[in-house]
Amino acid sequence: MRTYRERKIVPYSPDQVFDVVGDVEHYPEFLPWVEDLVIHKRWEEDGVEHFEATMTVTAKSYSGAARTQVRLDHVENEIVVDLLDGPFKHLHNTWKFRERKQRGTEVFFYIEFEFTSRVYQTLIGAFMGEAARRMVGAFTDRMKKLYG
Image 1 (tube, rainbow, N blue to C red):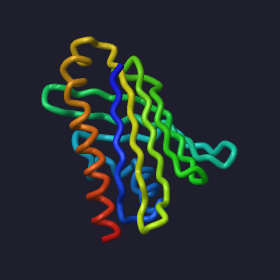
Image 2: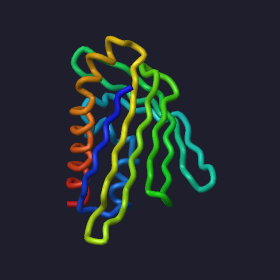
Image 3: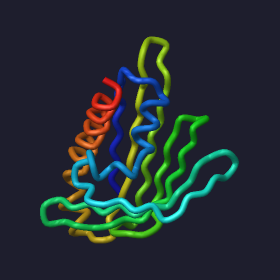
């Protein structure tokens, strides 16, 4: 299994960061490799928003779709993504947003994954760190566009 984590400080409020990361319907507009995203159902449980979605990713010779369950916890400023079905044996992703005493928000990004195919695990897994860095950068660019 491969893992990647990143910590970044951004000059936006935790609510602003949460809103951009949680706005999955707009991912195809700004996230690299995201071709499509479909939300299948939404529900609330104990004050926490949940939904199931399928995200289709295309990069070079790879194209695949993963169905995930997403938990948006506004109180804890945390978004958690877990695999339901797709090209992974395992996929878990967490975003945490912590307000800083100084201006801005500290963003924690963590992902762990394992493809069902050893070929994909070897080929794509080697580039996943760079892909995750580019995704975090795309979210930062989206915040700049929306909030200045």
